[in-house]
Image 1: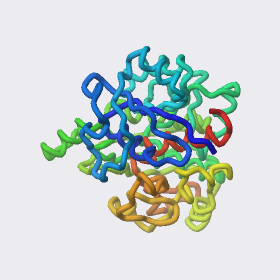
Image 2: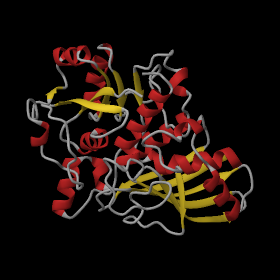
Image 3: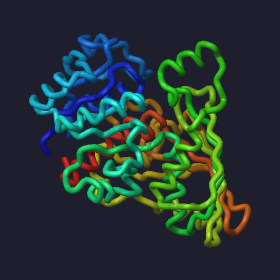
Length: 351
């Protein structure tokens, strides 16, 4: 498969650098451009401060171009850049992503600006891959990945919904600091305290789940931040139309797998869901669907951090299950998820 020339929209943020990390030696995509804000304009990529805890990978000798310049965007399109991965904040994404799309560059966005917008596929590869085809008229120009909080909630519920028929759920989250961005995380770590609430997060997560599952039941969500760098941990109780027991629930979750076409994608986890007795937020951060690597290199071990861990399963009533789930918010919930989405689109010959 010929490698496609791609750009990252974002130079110095957590998700932007996760994208650079995952694309540095990607077998299908070649990092050909990084577009950033005036703060980084013209800077050599190796001179942009590296904010991830992982070692900076070997990156191509690029200078940061202007993410908001029509001339720069048109020049990249003429040079053969055909895909862009957007790590822009939502308001900037709303303003700038259409310019990249209009230049003929397919944008895969991590921002919320165009999620649930008509004509822009909003996709989790394990749940609704056909939306890429159904909403793109054969030529994909713009697609969105999901909110990082949604992943550890929706993947287990999607599996259980297929088996038992979801009627309602409650969810409480403890979300890593990196979900609030680099500046928020640095301030919280420096001050040693965190703002416990996340305005708008519960509403956004609930709406996205309803959209992706086509579901209309009762839901109550409470989203909060915790003093941990990475990883989103959710606590869920759900009711179903069918009856169940713990053994049956474990079998459903263990057997649930992604679409067969995903098995060869470079970023796909070996299995999307992993079961554990309890959640260990350090040991489980880089779950890959087969095991729990402790110090992986995300630039080359692309499945690391792409699986959701489910634990502490209980059935307090015949139609009710409670569980905890955990996933890496800047990998599966952001950069890894959006690269996986592009891999799926490429495998479907939509790029």
